Image (cartoon, rainbow, N blue to C red):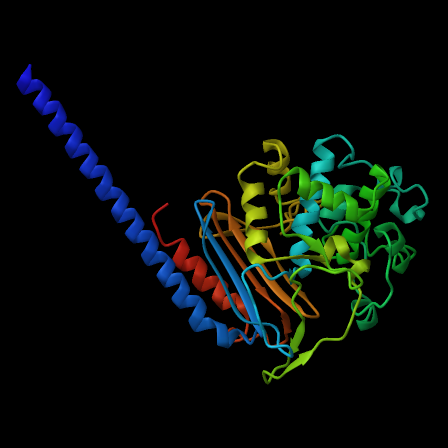
Length: 371
């Protein structure tokens, strides 16, 4: 019995030492990974041309890296911080798609019901447009007509009010037959949500964030005090930085009007991907490529962009608007996420000035481990 007890104690001690060795090695591997990520980010910052750049990275659905470089306000010499609130540009669309699908799963909105059910005074062109068409860019709603719409100076109290900028223009095609990217299509989706709930999109989004414990998001209302909002700039092809023209984002709150930090946005993506927001069936729908009526797959789910990288499913979005360049890629199976937020519209598309190379380098590093 004494010998048996001794063997058991020795085995437990050996198992404990083995476990500790594995943990130490894992921690060492993680530290090495973070060091390499930091090297990639710091070496790429100058090449991006961004006055300020925020980067957040996750692995296994945990944020392992967050860094802010450059300036939030150049004129006032204010450094960018990891909690600085960037304009998200079209990274707003996955947020709105998730908010709308939350209304769908709660029964307050029907995905395949004509939108005129909720907004009866829409023109007859919208008789066959559904919420699904809007969220998948298949409604035929036009995009920006000119720079004056991009730099709109009109303030709209609601998304329903913002419809008057485009609602009477003809649709580009029969709904469901084609895919044409449209920010105004998301303004329409926000207006439909307002019609279904009798609440403003502003209040709907605040309620959504509160119920799911999602923090740090706001709307880019130029008249409101938005905590930690960064200044926006334009960087030309020669690297010269200038203040961007003033504009009012209320014509596109649902499609390009949210603000948040890189960390906050990544936490949102992780919350969605971890099943803390949408039910499994709803999550499957938003991350399934939508098809046109002839069976052609599109690059869009419901609010989210859908793609693959070396056989891995990837969701996310890219955004570009005056004062902001943004990108997020999230790999649900691996829990790997990357958010890049730049407080300028960077007009040079070459790889050494574009954020795409930084995104590609980070993905390669983070996904290099065996699956």
